[in-house]
Length: 317
Image (tube, rainbow, N blue to C red):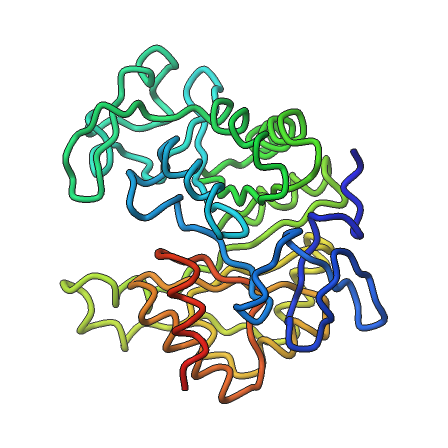
């Protein structure tokens, strides 16, 4: 199925100026929905579960399935490729924080070794749950065709092999188009665009100040670090480099530091997704402040908790 810009795979840039339509490319630009079921009680902001259900091991089969079953519009996952080119779901390049196997790089393992890896729960206890392969998760996701799979490619690559492989994997398993790729590596997006001319792609913009603030050991030094500056020219450059539909995925600390970002993005047809490295409380605080200052909401948010709680708190004065 062709992933046209009028399909489910689009992006709703700033919902306060958009009607709630299932599909739209209207006069204000490429105004597209990122889910068939945007949560009306959250001002149209698309909500994705960060690494799945927060009550289950992160990036696990159960966490992802529970996220797809729940009220989230989609699930954010992290993907990497093993030595034998099988795709797996795992955030960290070096194992140990969330897995029974420690001090080994994901890219150095083969599939038989990966099958022996067990996940830890959110408290750090090893469980009996096997670390997932992407193919198994996508097979289960067939039961939830309306939900979005938001996949970040975690590994760096100078060539196009990784991005091309990821696009092929998702196109084969999820031909309805309800998936998209993100990365901090622009090269991944450029490569994906060559083989996927119509799909949404998201650039993750790292904020060194926000990264420092999440760790008590470095929090005191955070203010000395620079926050990304994202102006209209920067956004125009991204469009030229990757082409639409494209978006940026940023910490709310970056949003706070760039006063005109939401307006500039809306004018250019660029989606803005937010997250917060510290947690939902800070995420909500920053989004409310942005709304008061600009009158605008982001296109979507990647959240750590339940949608109902997030939406209720978001609407508080």
